[in-house]
Amino acid sequence: MNKAYNPAWARHEALQTAAQNWHRRGLLPLPQLQAIRAAYPLIYYRPNIYLQILLFLLTMLGYMAVLGLIFLFTAGLFESTFNWSAPIMIGLAALLAALAGQFALQQLISSSRTYRAGSDQALLYLSLGFAALAWQAFVDAALPNVLDFLLLDSPYLALWLLPVLALLLWATARFGDALLAVLAYVAVMALLANGLLQFGAGRLPLPFAIMALAVGLYQLIRYLAARTNYWYYHACFITLEVLSLATFYLGGNYLIVREGNAAISGLPVSGQIPFAPVFYLLTVLVPLFYLYQGLRRPSRVWLLTGLATLAFSGYTLRFYHSVLPPAVASALLGAFLIGLIAAALRYLRTPQHGLTAAPDNESGERPGLNLEALIVAQTAHAPQSPEPGFQFGGGQSGGGGAEGQW
Image (cartoon, rainbow, N blue to C red; front, side, top):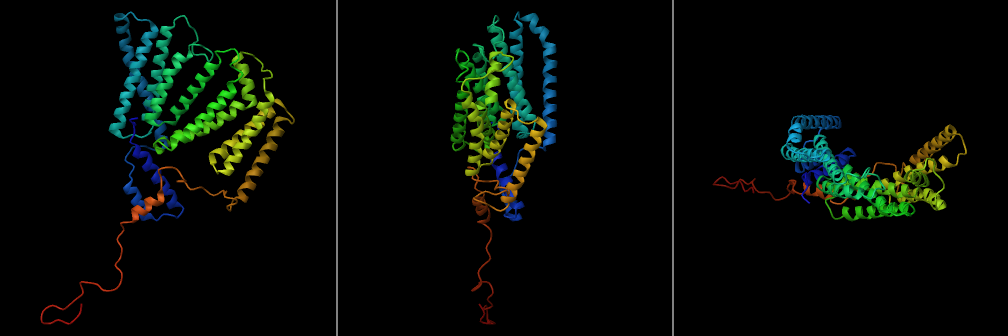
């Protein structure tokens, strides 16, 4: 896949970040840090976060304003020249807007070397959004008698969702954007749910199918992380890993399954669901499993996800089985969590059983980033001082006035 950005930019950024962290911790001298910066320069443009937000908003406004002016002056001409229906006109206009956005995006990246600077992300999201809108208009024109084909249980949803999913996968592979990866995963889940809901008993296996999809996504992430340009897709991998863990938990959470089943069925009040004890058991055991894995690996992603899911499990049990008033329960739970965190930080101030509360090594064991080897390579060619002993150049034994010194 031809990538939109230079893949070396992501790796150089990771190397400089790791080197800066080592220098801040006193593990890397300043000359070596400067040598790494010179050998792996950041030649792209990316301002600070505030300018990124400003560029994102200004690019969106400018893009929409230019397109609005163009369509304002050309809409009447097209209507008088071509006798097309409104969905066709909307689809063509959105398709032209998407193509124009992609062309502007490629020119911006090649000429200004922007790398996730806000302006390029705005053009990317808007162009893909217009492409999805164009396909929606074309499907609407092809199915004039079908209303609400975008509903989750509609038999025509796949006609729109499959091309959109293909577009999102292409854009994710080309740009390495985490938001696009999330949207692609959501589209896959929607297709899975839509396929199951076409059957009468499709709601029954839907939670387990979502959990199986989450397991498949996690295995796919581990497979791709070892075989692709890791740092180019680093944000995608981390985001999808968290999303797969969250999806697996939510697929078996009792509250989500019960209320989601009522929403799909169109019921105003949720009732008891089949296999309720199984979902209660999953609600309790999955967060504990995440915490165990987070401490055993150790993995900060698993640990933090386990803490978040454990809190939501408490909310789930509290939602259906109230024991204390909400204010009292929240105060007691907050005090317990604060005390638990304080005790854990104090206990792990010094490493215990392979765990510590100190900041971890930022470079870690991530593929493609061996900072120790890089430092050796940067210092291997440093000039060495000559050893003491016999030295040339100090002799005075020339001519008739030789003094016998070598």
